[in-house]
Image 1 (cartoon, rainbow, N blue to C red):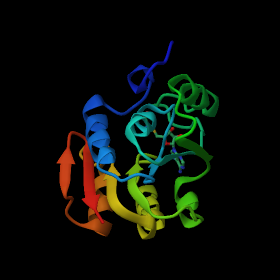
Image 2: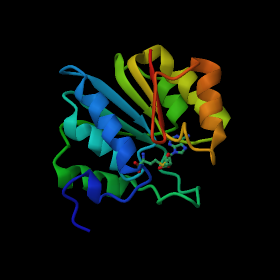
Image 3: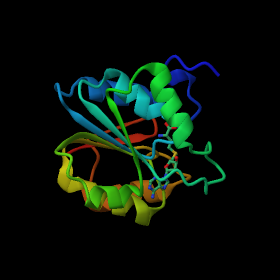
Image 4: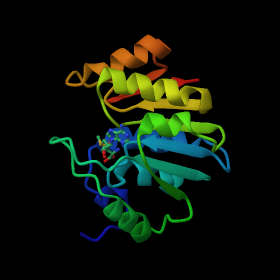
Amino acid sequence: MLVVDWRDIEGETPDQDIELLIELVETLPDGAIVVELGTNRGRSGLAMASVCKGTVYLVDNFTPDHPGWVAPSREVLEQNIAAIGLQERCVVVEGDSAETGRDWQGGKVGLLFIDAAHDEGSVRADIEAWLPHVEGYVCLHDFNNPHVPGVQAAARALLGEPWKVHWLTGVYCV
Ligand SMILES: C[S@@+](CC[C@H](N)C(=O)[O-])C[C@H]1O[C@@H](n2cnc3c(N)ncnc32)[C@H](O)[C@@H]1O
């Protein structure tokens, strides 16, 4: 399929959640750093990159082990980045989401979007690894999805009450 913008990319994040992410990323200053955990083929990540005035780090382990998701592919992600012309603003990071956070030396993150593994333990590990690096928004996809209660359980245990819930996404200001 011809990809001209994020709407053409197969993926898991509904338009309503992406519209919220776009709104938040637009408020960030020049040079801002955005990190997405769980990029898959780039639907939500490239939507954020389209409006980001800094750099978007796209983290995925590209392991096709989840039957419910579109198969992740670094090759397709990189084709999509090039097709939309976002090479200057995107950095693909292949690796485990929490490990990447523990090793992070890339500076303060203005918006962190958590959408990797959705079990409570993994979401807790992502929050714990990345929280020290965030000054801005922590957004969790599927916070408001009863099929994956671990996302909200992890977020509430570590971060408390969200600032905002929109569609499936919960947002914290930290
Ligand atoms: C729900 S999909 C992400 C959807 C994407 N945000 C979109 O808009 O299409 C979850 C992604 O997280 C990745 N993933 C799962 N566990 C991970 C982990 N521990 N570290 C890094 N990536 C992981 C999967 O490979 C998959 O591509």
